[in-house]
Amino acid sequence: MKVLKFGGTSVGSAERMKAVADLINDGSPKIVVLSAMSGTTNQLVQIAETLYQNANQEANALIDALHDKYKQVVEALYLTDDKKKQALELISHHFDHIRSFTLDLFTIYEERAVLAQGELLSTALFQFFLEEQGIPSVLLPALNFMKIDENEEPDTAYISKNLKLELEKHPDATLFITQGYICRNAFGEVDNLKRGGSDYSASLIGAAADASEIQIWTDIDGMHNNDPRIVKNTFPIAELSFDEAAELAYFGAKILHPSSVQPAKQKNIPVRLLNTMQPQAQGTTISAQTGKGGIKAVAAKDGITAIKIKSGRMLLAYGFLRSVFEVFERYKTPIDMITTSEVAVSLTIDNPKFLAEITRELQEYGQVEVDQDQTIICIVGDFIADRSGSGLKIFKALRDIPLRMISYGGSKNNISLLINTTDKERSLVLLNEGIFERNNSNA
Image (tube, rainbow, N blue to C red; front, side):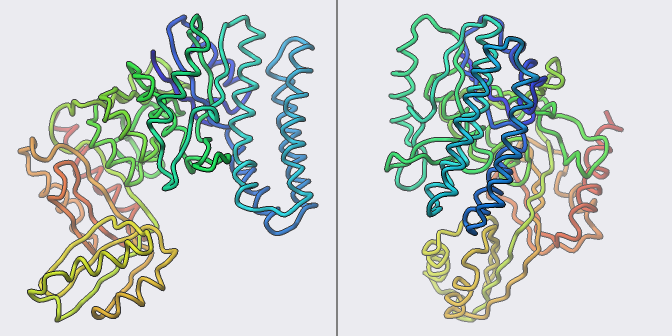
C-alpha cells in the first residue's frame, strides 16, 4: 500500500484532476490524499474574515463567486449529464452550508467548518469523476479517522485504529480517496492540521497504514538546493535524510510541511517528492539514507524576531537559562536559535503574538533588546561526513553580509545564520554562487 498526496495545484482545475486520475489508475493498492483546489482555502479564509466582521452581504458575494467557479469546474470535468447534475447538487449543498453561517453568530468553530469545505469538495468531485470513468475507488471520510488531541497534536493511536476499521469495510478495494488537512478535535468538532496540513495528513495516514512509500505530488520536481523563486539555476536534490528534510522544511522550503517528516521517520517509510506536471522526473527521495556528505541545500525563514537578554547576574549563575526559557514556555512560544555568552543570551522566535508580554517578563532578568524583520538562513547537509571545509565556503560567500547570530553544532545537519531580511535575497544568491556553482564547476 502506498499513500499519494496531491496538492492544490495538482487538482486545481478539471484538466489537472483528469491528469491525477491517469497517474493513480495503475491497479496497485494506494490511498490518495487530496488538498482543496488551489485558491479555495484562501477564498474560504477571506469568507470567514468577512463573517467575523458581520459583513454578511460581502460574504455572500464571495460565496457566490466561489460557487460559480466550482460550477465551471463541473462543466469542464464531466462528460455525462447525470454526473454533472449529481456534482452540481453536491456543490450546491456545500455552498448552502457555507451560506448558513451568514445567518447567525460566527465563531472559531464555524470557521473550522467553513475551511473544511475545500477538501470535502475536491475529494467528492474527484470521486465522481473516477466513477464516471469506471475506475473502482472508495471515498474514505477523513473525519471518521483523523483526530487531534487536547494539545492539538495528532492522536496517532486513534488514527491507526480507525483508519484500519475504515479500510476493513472494503476488503476488495485497492484505491481509496480521502481528504488532507481536515480532522476532528478532542471534542469531536471539525478541525484541521493548520495550513499545509495535507502533507502532514499523508504522512500520518502512511504511518497508520504501514505504507511502503509516501508520495507528495506538487508542481515542482522535488526539493531544490535553493529557492527557485529567487535564485537562478537551482536543481532538485536526489536524496535527503529524514533529518535533513525536516530542517529544510522547518526553515522555509515550501514544498514540504515541517511536521510531515516525523511520522514517516518513526516508521522508516520513504517519502518521495514528485511533480504532477513532469511525472517522469526523478524528484527527491527522503529516507534514512543521506547520500554523499557535504552541503545539500539552503533555505530561508522570514518573520523572525531576535531577542537579547544581557545581565551581569548571568555570570556563573545556574538556573538563569531555565528562568528565561520558562518565560517562553508560559506563552507557548517556541525558540528557533540560541547563542550564549558569559553575560548575555540571544535567541529567536517566529511568533511575535506575545512579544510585549515576553519582553516585559524578561526585563526582570536584565536589559532586553529586540530586533524584528530578521531572517534565518539554514544551510543543510551532512557536516559530520563532510571534509571539504563547508564552514569556510559559507562564510567566504557571505563575507559582505552582516551576521546577527550563528548556530552550529546543535545538529550535524544544520548551520543557521540570522541576518536582516533586507539581505536575504542577496545572501541566497551569494551562497548559490559560492557553494553550488563552484561544486558544479569542480565536478
